[in-house]
Image 1 (cartoon, rainbow, N blue to C red):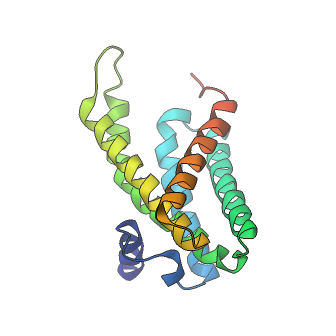
Image 2: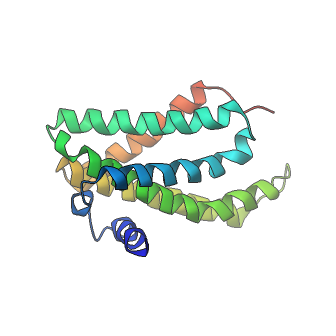
Length: 172
């Protein structure tokens, strides 16, 4: 298990790419499950225990799969879909675990008019690095320059934001 975590860590440090992962359905499902669990805990302060909590995670996973499959199809690299999704889910779960303490710290400090500089800055740093990691995965999976992968990562981030914005505000 530590070897798998280390492998995803190497991808987050841009030392390895999705092509270095085994094309394993088991690893894909395991990483997707870990990603879903971490996303549930990250979204819990926003949605509480509600149908929307589970729906938001399913929408997030579905949007990622559709985006990856669409881009791989356009670039004629569909054979890389398993490894690419495994890389996205695994690194997303790993970075999500790093976000958890800051996410809950920020939630505990959420007093109107009081800044929560440290947890907000930490979350911003992790999200920024996540964009870099996603850009790295896109660039390696699609065989495009890193800058183009980073642009796709930013575009996906905004697409994800727009989709969740359309869902409306979280329940009060």
